[in-house]
Image 1 (cartoon, rainbow, N blue to C red):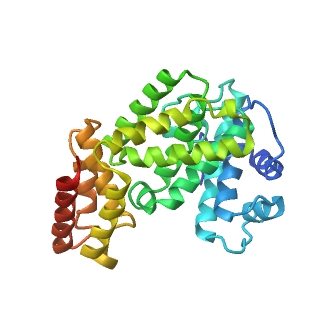
Image 2: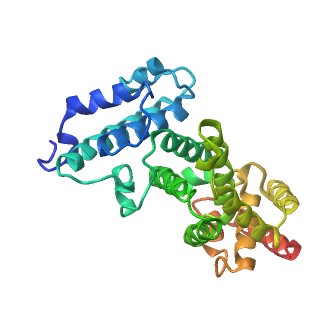
Length: 303
């Protein structure tokens, strides 16, 4: 039985209406209704999961009908999350609360996100594409990581209008926070590049603003210690050492990126990443030793 104060117990018909309405993806301009923000984000996450922008396909997903080529389990999870977020957002709306990251990520603490519908959709697509491209995110952080990727991406869009120095400062702060939690700055660098590409595909250049400069700063900091060629070599070394026993794809790149952060002073060490990759739940003891040897080889090659 649902608890009386559970937000999923509120407005079930309105939740369905909002999600089905916004499956058409026609809303433009500034969104000041938390429930609309939640619906727009929920639908855009389905766009990526279903690899379709067709309203009929998205409404099939909402109704629990199979979408060809989509991971139905993942789609069902996203639909359930979207319904919960829209329901909770309706309570926020009814109590006069505004829009912040907490609308679609209750654990966020409520930081600023873009409320422009077009830019918000681009931010969600970039976030979900980054999650899909790096299985490490899902393996380590699960659905919580996906939600933070979405709201962090929408926060990054809000930095575009800042001057270059301020935007870079904010992005470097986020890089330090994430790297300390096991996400090397290279991941944010790649995400920013994807975000810029998404924004440029749907909005004028001013919407991109200072974000390319921030991505370039992260890349320059990394390359002072670990160049692109070493990222490629590190992947090859890890693949040769462990083969199919790798804990996640691109393990070598992740190790090299963490070494770069350590050398650059972004983190004190690479323990947050290395300890997870070599944990007994991820690899056998002999493979953990091989991974540490790969990390040592990367350190020897790094500048």
